[in-house]
Image (cartoon, rainbow, N blue to C red; front, top):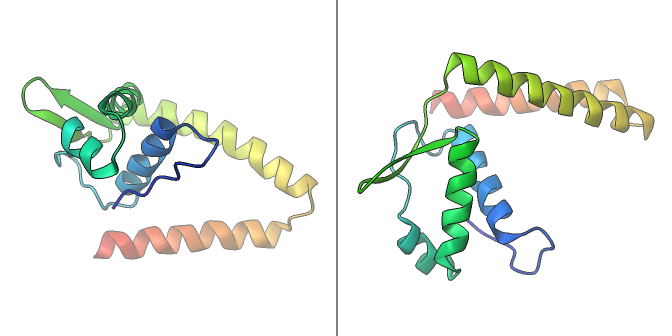
Length: 128
């Protein structure tokens, strides 16, 4: 389910954060679903439990998961107020990346097709 590139320059905890976010966004992991324990995930991925803990803390800080003492970590629900702030932040990032892509020669049509493909993919996943 989670594959990490141990040779990558990207820190392992950041890779883990990105992979878990991707699984949540794609609907593979549903709201309120329990995540693997730090110990079991560390054994499965053969990495230090502190690395898993750091990734879980970051995901919790960003609002993707929540922890219940003695019970574990769970996927968070999307909250309207928090969602709006995240949308604003990601929109600024999107504008910056889009400007750079256009500057480098990517066509408007290619960008629109990419968005439409992502939207279609997201819709198909929600239907399953």
